Length: 363
Length: 265
Image (cartoon, rainbow over all chains, first blue to last red; front, side):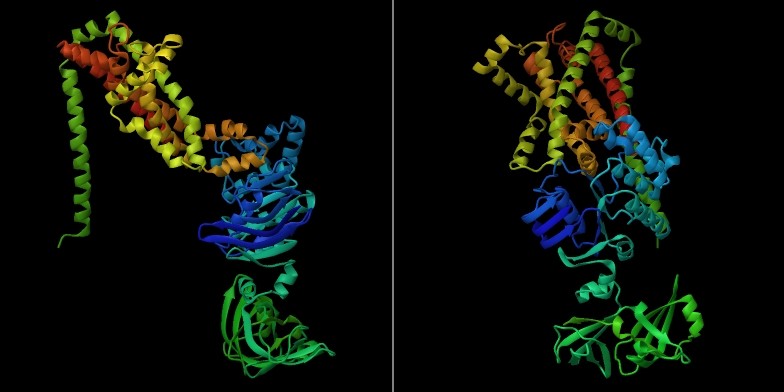
């Protein structure tokens, strides 16, 4: 549906460099990155709103050369929504259908369906969009984009200005839309939670370059670079050196400070190689003293001490010091697990860095 | 030591005093103007057939010139606001020339052009401008079109191109985008621009009298009637026409304020 090969584009001192992406029919593709990464510029280049210097951009099989392509049904919801201020809600939503001379009865039927899907039936008769809340305006903009039944829907930071409660509601709405309508979605966001909840595949972008493209689970467990790992909040990054690889047994030992981490072998690593061991805070486990240890937990089980605990809406963020490790580790616990473990500051604990949760990035 | 509150108060007093002074000065001019006109003179001047013809000619010419100016200014201002192209600065500067030139100088240039061979050919076969009503319209149009372009360019620049981009993807062609989105969004700005152009056109004197002259009953507009009245020592008539221009200016400026306030509100 969208194919980008070797894209280059210069915008003053900023440039998009060597971008390769492909979005399949019906796929929800999310481009995520920090502010200023060039996400909006890329979406504008793909839409043909900005010229590119080199490479190839194909939209629905047609080349994009600095101007929007004809003949491919595309809808675009920009970050500021751009609802037409001189029209009411109904006129805004049906604008595309009127311009395309879609039969009135068909438009009304589609309008009713979309309004029900997006919970905006009560808003249809509003004569001014000024009376809409941000969340309502977002849903109206989505309805306006969807009424023309686009093959590709481009969403530029659609939920960025919403509070977290409304954002979560709209993310669920968008999931429902994905299930109900067969439309390819190319979405840009800086919020990785949104990206993980919605994306079939996610591309991570930094400073005009794509760092990694992968499905959410792979991205979370196997970040390609330290930059990606840090951006996706893999807070525990431990620097070490490969000590031993047993390719036959498929095991690898990595020395990190005074510890030896056991993990699955990485084919292209060799002993002596400098690596960073990455483990997400949710994957670090505190083992109850009375718990019987299975084989998975027995490896990489270390003594440590709780240094800090910070409550969060869903539980606790703990900082623990593992004996023999210079860097403290961050652990995320649910309220329930925290209460169960009965942890106080300075508590001595056993901490498991499970082999299957460890991911290694060469330095 | 003076407190910050006292300093703040002095600033407030200063700004209010400046406002009061200038408002009083301009009000004094208008009140003096009104005080010097006898009640009988209003009737004598305004009810005369010549005054009616002068006012009618001024209103008609200013309206036609302003409409023509907007017909050119709207697409030009839109293009200048939306597109970058080689030589844009040069084109922009050329369009500003009527603003920079004094009206009499501009009128002289127009006369020279109209007196050239091509100008004569045009006048002989199509429309005659010199010392004729079309000359008034041409002079007023030339003066106000640049002003209209300036003000409308600012209007279009304030409208986010996102609206047009979204409309384009919803299926509009460029004409539909312009007519259905850009123009309605610029509506109050266009009306305000028209009113300002009209106000400038109705008060235009230098270029108009140079190109069209001031033939009573034929090409005499309100500003040229003021000039002729002064030259003929008809002070009462001059002041009444001046008051008429003041009245029109107040109506027009209040109209612009109302429209722009509505737009920003």
